[in-house]
Every structure is written in structure tokens, then in C-alpha cells.
Image (cartoon, rainbow, N blue to C red; front, top):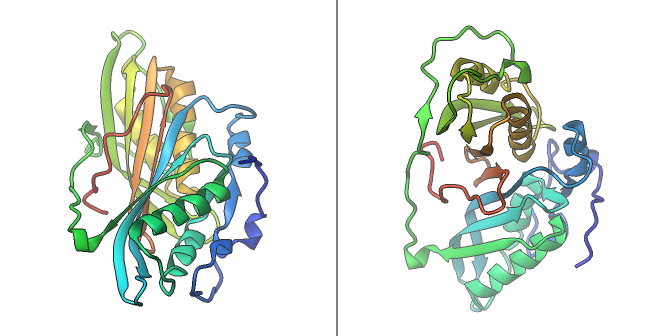
Length: 282
């Protein structure tokens, strides 16, 4: 499909204003947002220095079977980080709700329809899985593997991103580790509503100063950006300040409106997040 980075202005988004729920099916409700402007703020003007995916889980998915009986399901959507656009989350919720009064022959038909609509919105192929609850799908709760740094006793009085907090022990030998914090909080770029997440930094290189990393994570507390943009900012800042040999950043955000968003960015194309398990807060 032709790929364009253009998208409507954020002022046209359904975020932050009353919007009537629509039924039946209305793919025009999807609101795409160009990735390029926020990436340009990070100095990324062409191909980004990372690969990855935005993993969305939708827990309030329903439609009608051919006889008008409701089907309820869980959906997972894999949006490639290489797509020129992302989808605003409230618009995705409104779009999924528009399926509530629509009849489909099967879950596969729903999967294909959602995949086509999301792919058209973001400008790249989106992977979609649909699991009707009648099939008793299971969801594993687990923790991101790694060392949690949240118990480090640090003084913090800055709540806007501060890359200068990041540093490494230059005299120490390289190592490979995953550092985890549950203290990531940012705010929606449009509404100012809080977004909460667990973030993991997986890297190989000189040891990252843990106290500095914790102060850096907490410095997002009053920062206004979408989930995907925060993770890309963290990746770029850690990459520039700490210069690791390899790096991956993964955040699992808590559910809002029946949807959780889990962006993953890595400097290796074949790198992958640990899996689509549920964080305790999801």
C-alpha cells in the first residue's frame, strides 16, 4: 500500500472532548498520528536507529455473530515501529466499540477486518490476533526479568526528562544486564491524564549508573508525551549518554479504556520483547 507520513493535526483528535459512541462498524474513527515530528525533536530525521513494535492488548472487544448473538474476545495488535504513523488510543477504543453492533461470520473475519483497517491507518502491516473468550484463552501474569532499581535511596526534585542524569562507570568492565523500574509515569500529550508503566533497560556495555538511571526514569513524571514517544526518547537518551554496545527498552503501560500499550525498541532487528504476558498492574 502507498505509505505517507501525513496525518491530521492533533487538535482534530477525539482525545479530551466528548465523542458519541458509534455503532455499527466505522473505520473512519481511527485517528492516525505521524511519528516524524516527535522523532525530529530527538534528532531523528530519516530512518530511526532502532527497530521494534508497539504491542496493544484490547480487552473489551465484541461483535455479533450472523444470528445477532454477541461474541466477546481479547485482541492483540502488533504495530511495527517502522510504520510512519501510530494510532491515537481513544480513537482505537471508539473504532473497536463500533464493532459491537456489527455482524461477522467468524472471528477470522473480524481479525482480517481489524488488520486491514489498522494497517491502512498506520501505513504498515499490523499483526492481529483475536481470541474469543469461549475458547478459554489464558493470560500469564509475570514480571519482566532483571534487577529492580526502585529501592535505591535518591533525592529527586526534577520531573522533566533529564538525559544528563544518565552515565556509566567508565573504569568498570562491560557487562550485560536488565534494569527494571516500576516508577515510570508520564502524562497524555493531549489530556494531561497520567500514564503508568514498568520500564526495562536491557543492555550490554559499561555498567549504567543505577541511581542516575532511577532519577532519569522518575524525571518523566510531569512529561507530556504518548507511550511510544516516551519509550523512543528513553532509548535515544540512554544510547547517546551511555553508549552501550547493544540496547533494548521495553515499557508495559497500565490499562486505560480497556487497552494496554507496550512499546519495545531495540538496536538489533532480530531483538524481541520477553513476551506478551501481563504485568501485575495490567
